[in-house]
Image (cartoon, rainbow, N blue to C red; front, side, top):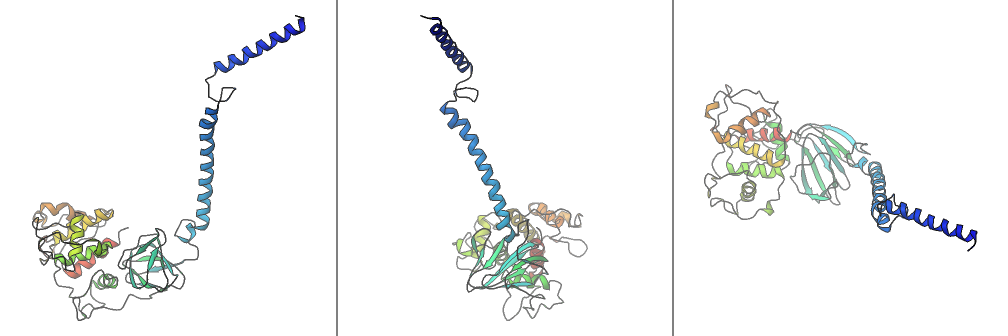
Amino acid sequence: MNKKRIFTSVLAILLVIGCSASAFAAEAGTSSDPLISRSHATGTFKSQFMTGVKEFLSARFDALYQEHVASISGGSKGTGSFVKNNVDTGSNAALTFGDSVIVTSGSASLRIESGSVVNVTTGTLVSSGSRLILNNRYMSLEDSAANVIATSPSVFLCDGTVEIGKTALPASFTDVLSSHWAFREIEALAATGIINGIGAGLFDPNANMIRADFATIIGRFAGINAGDYTGSSFSDVPASEYYAPYVRWGSSNGLIMGYTTTSFEPNYNITRAQMATLIVRYANYAGITLPTGNGSGRKFVDDSAIPAWAYDSVYAAEKAGIIRGKGADNFDPEGFATRAEICVIIQRLSAIK
């Protein structure tokens, strides 16, 4: 064998040994392996590549959303063609086909006279009497006529041919004049169908409210579909009564309790202690965080008369500014709540963001 062939053979052997040594020294299937394995390509490399692609697409999607969607749905980048309107309690925004409203602060309810209204943000139809969700866009569909009623001082963003009522809706009841201390609250709730009169154009604001009616008002305020609650929860609540679905909804969600396990006593007047308890239970149910600095923070003079089962709720409602004392700073837990008082309390609750 000549010298040239020997040198070539030795060089080849050294190269093979060198490459093998470096390959075996590295962990197979890793980026440090000079012979990158298929498992590395389809594992680490593919995973990192796909993560980068997803991050790029996500960033691009967010940019497109802000450019084309957020501007028309109350997003932080602007309000598109929406016109800002500061409205007072009881004012209304009249919607016809194609009109849109976004409530950015305060509270409002929907009254549909004909047709349908869709929540564009969630893609769902909205029932008449529903409370509007802040920063959601509501659009009136074809052949529709509807009103968005402010149930507290609010900000409406309006698009289309929306007409804003310049003043509160006219008086609905002959016994509740504009000078009445609860006029605005009664009118706001009556306008959305949350509360009704007693007939003959009367509201009877000073009458005591019965338990059946209070359950009905809370259910309507929550915007429930009465048709979803059939049957009866109590032996003294006939399924055919107007208040039956609301009592069933309330009892099913732990808001309403009976006097016994089988009786509700729908025609009993609701006491102020019961009223406070149900209001706080509803706030918890609806995810409404009650503030603690809107009330006086003082104890009522008749603090010792407040029953234990209502004690925490009474003071939670007082601290939130929803319920106040009577007369010489008494709470009067066993006293009855009037129809006007209930309207004011519901309105105070609706004003909490």
